Image (cartoon, rainbow, N blue to C red):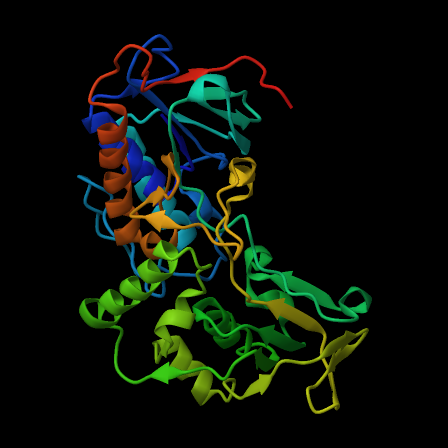
Amino acid sequence: MVVIGGGQSGLSAGYHLKRHGFSDARTDPGGARTFVILDSSPAAGGAWRERWESLRMETVNGIFDLPGFPKPPLDPAEPSRTAVPRYFASFEEASGLPILRPARVNAVRRADGGALIVESDRGPWRTEAVINATGTWDNPVRPHYPGQETFAGIQVHTREYVSAQRFAGMRVAVVGGGISALQLLEEISRVAATVWYTRREPVFHDGEFTPEVIGRETIAKVTADVEAGRPTGSVVSYTGLVWTPYALAARERGALRRRPMFTAIEPYGVREADGSFTSVDAIVWATGFKASLRHLDPLGLRNEQGGIRLTGTQVAGEPRVHLIGFGPSQSTVGANRAGREAVTALVRLLGPSAGPGRPVAARPAGPSPG
C-alpha cells in the first residue's frame, strides 16, 4: 500500500494500516502486507509548516486529535506553523510510521498485471492500492485578469504570504471571499489602506459556527456533490461566513467595504466594474486552493464535469484508489475518519492477508515506462 501525503489524513491512514498489521515497506521489502507514506514536505507538519507567520492557534479552525494521540495543551498565541508540526512530529515518533520524505509523487499509472506504479522523485513503487492524502496547499487558485502581467506592484497568493509588514504604508487590493481572505484583510488593514474585492456578495451568518448543525449540513452537501461527481466548491461556498473576532475587527476598522471584482489590471492599479480606476501598490490573491490531484491524471479518474465521483473515500470505478482529506473529509476530524474508512475498505477489498497473486504490499519498482 502506498499513502501519498503525510499531513493529518495521511498520518491517520498510516496509523490504521499499522493497526491492521502492515509493516514498513522500506525495511521489509519482501513482506506481503507492507506500506510506505511518501510525503513531499522536508519534515513533519505538511502544509502547516508554510502557513503565514501571524496565523495563531486561536484563529485556526481547530485541529482534531490524531488517532490515539491527544494533543498536549497548546498556547493560543503560538504560531500554527510551529505548534501543529511539533504535534505531528510527536505523533510520528510515537507511532513509528514508515514515512519517506521529502518524496514528491509525479504520477500514478496502471501497470501490467493490475498493479499500480507510483512514480516519485525518490524512485517508483509498485502497489496494489493507493491512498491519496495530498490536500490542497500545492494547488493554489490563481485567477487571471486582463493586463495582470503589466502590473508594476506586488502580487502574492495566500501561499506566498508571510506577514502584513511587507505592505506597510501601501494601498492593497485583497481579493477573495473566504476565511483566509478575511484574516489577511483584517491583518493588512492594520498597517495599510485596503480595498476588498469578491466575485459574489459575502454572506455572514449571525451566531457561532455549530458543528452539530452547520457542520453536519455542510458535510451532507459536500458528500452529495462528490457522490454525484460534481466538482466541489470552497468551504465558504457551503457554509457562508461567521462573525469571528477578526471579521468583527475588520468591520470596526472599516475594511469590510466590499467591492465587486475589478475587470482589468493596469500597471499602477485596477479598473473597477463601473469603469473607474483605483490605484493600488499590491494585490493579495486570497483566492483559495483546489485539491492537489494532478499526479493522478494518468488514471483518468475525472469525469466530463472535471469532478471525481466517490463512494465514501473510494473512487467510483477504481476501488484501488481512495481520496482522503478531500471533499467532505477536508476538516481535521473528517481526515481522521477518512483515514480509518479508506484502510478498512481496502483491507476488505484486498483481503485480510495476501493470497496467491494478491499481494497487499508496496515494493520499490524498477524503472517504469514513460
